[in-house]
Amino acid sequence: MKLALELAKKGLGSVEPNPAVGCIIIKNNKIIGTGFHKKFGSAHAEINALKSCKKSPAGATMYITLEPCCHLGKTPPCTNAIIKAGIKKVVAAVGDPTGKVGGKGFKILKKAGIEVETGICQKEAEKLNAPFFKFAKTKKQWVIVKWAQSKDGFLARTDGKRWLSNSASRKDVQKIRKKTQAILVGINTVIEDNPKLTVRPDNGRQPLRVVLGSKSKWPKNCYLSKTAKKWPVCVFNGRNLNDVLIKLGKKTIQQVLVEGGQKVITSFLKQNLADEIIVYTSNEKLGSKGKVKSSQIMMKNYNRLKKNYSSKKSFGKDIRLTGLRTNHQ
Image (cartoon, rainbow, N blue to C red):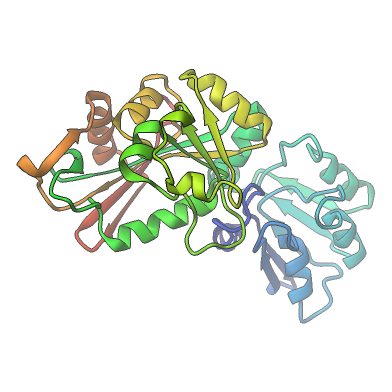
């Protein structure tokens, strides 16, 4: 199952809003097939694993990180393929919490005479697809709050240079954007930075660009206006963040990446709306060249993150810290 979970991770950034799923097929104590869900709309992990088998999977055991689907979506039901292949036993890490599946997949397999075992590495499987599980159970998005800062806590600079983080860090941000279905900023970011808010290079699936604040304040010919016909922009004049998230939820937006400035990020943190925090810190101290410092609550969360991060990675001299905020401390 741990191997199946490692396989599943390969799909992160390409399968969303679907869950990342991995599958291993064992026969006579040997692996005869492996697969994972590679891309949204493409074959699921079970199908890829069955296709990879060099021996007949009849009588084999399938290890899968999520309950097999039993409905016709963008692809046929996986339960049908499992039964047809003659799989003897299915070991699943966790059940699928969505209404379309919700245990029905297991029931279909059992009815066909297939032994089903669940709960192996369940916590790891739920953590891997935390946004999927949260949205399925609550209809509330997984909110990622991300910012970059200098070593002395500044969020912007006055020396004419645009970036605080280096090119490697900015490339990494694109991987985070690929996982999300919406990128949110405030009106000040639009005015000061003229952002694109797109995934680069374009992989054909761009997140919805969300802006808090009146469109009447946008600079003329700003990038968001010029590209709105190609990549939609959703504008909210109000500042009630809960209402914004509810409306985005109705659009089946599962993950939201908040890339706003100090005010927007502070609001999300104060209102306990962030599930995950990602901070890129450069090795540069700006001093008199810096402007807009991280707010008190941003620094509080950053200091906590330094002691209790789930991931730490270096990009040149930049450091990225990632941590969950599900306890909303």
